[in-house]
Image 1 (cartoon, rainbow, N blue to C red):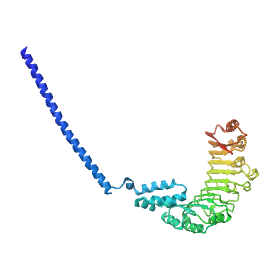
Image 2: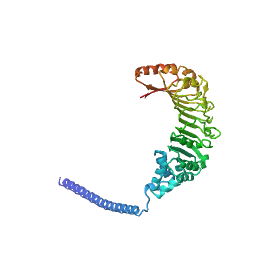
Image 3: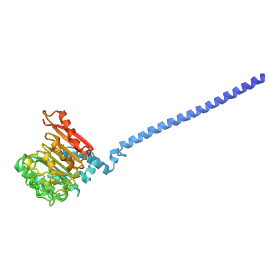
Image 4: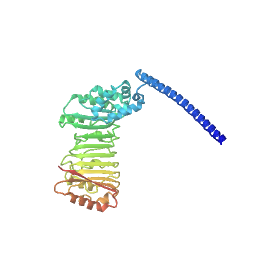
Length: 386
């Protein structure tokens, strides 16, 4: 019995010794790890100090300055595009951004696409127009003529610089021009100029009833997009036969005997928008007398769209947006036979106090019934006459 007790005591002593040895080993590891952690923390503090010193000494550039020049130029370009009006964006915003740093200044001065918009505007100087002409290299130019309310010799000075590179004009926008005859004639001084690269023209408030030659194939052979707003008449207008997009806003009561005649030769026309006055019914061409084989999108925001709609045949039309005079049904009487490929019909209803919504809704349902097998999307919008 005594020998057994002695054996158990010896085992307990050995286990205790082993446990103490393991504890000692773990304590040594803890001490080493704490010492290592202290060393690492000290090294982190030293490294942070070095980084701070390097930034203070400007040995490392700021992150924005490490962007490739092309990326920085593209960012600046997008900022300028989002600034309105455009004349201020290219006159003021570029100057403000160029003052940020030498790098930004170099990015702006060395990026031709930032200099392709030129405003013939009273707020612009000749030197600014010349700078845009020079720094744009040989890139296509977008010209904006605007904000002329009275006659000024400075217009001739500015336009004189811009037309020296007329062969590079890509877009021409004429807007916010005063109604005085002298001012209108001032702008029309470019009517007979040739623009071999011109693709898009937008004219607001300047009458083109004198048939400006620069809209024809001879003077602007690449013209594809034409917008004419607030026009009294367009029946005698001659336009490029390669026109693909046309937007015409008619403001007069009597806008000529054949308002669609300028488009007869435009067999590549893909999108057409007619808005404003409807004129007189006998002014429009005979029903189904005009064919637009390539027309895919047609918008008629007219007081009475029926005469214009009846005159056209568009076998490839897929989108039709149309306002109504009184009831939809007469407007679309021949719809299934003439526009066989329309898939999206967008009806615009001018609400008034004499036509309750319920009757308009019923009219829409009745109108869509004849061609319901063809239409994939029917949308209805409501505008107020008040």
